[in-house]
Image (cartoon, rainbow, N blue to C red; front, side, top):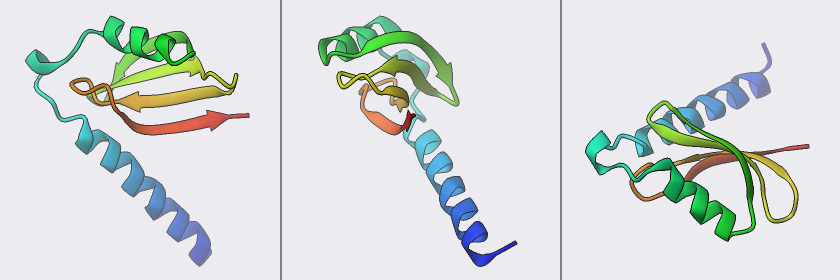
Length: 87
């Protein structure tokens, strides 16, 4: 395994744990999924699915520019904690 592969693997693991750490919110403090959907649609997103994953809301959508996006949101603040765009 090359040094670059090791660095990329460690960077990915840090990002994943960072996202889940930001979503450690007691269930009684969560906003409803519908609130996230309304927020995203208000920003021009076309949401196809929102689910719970690792304590975060995970949304599959197309953003206002038409790019496919998979994004994780803090269920209390509805702020993005991680996102990736697909080609």
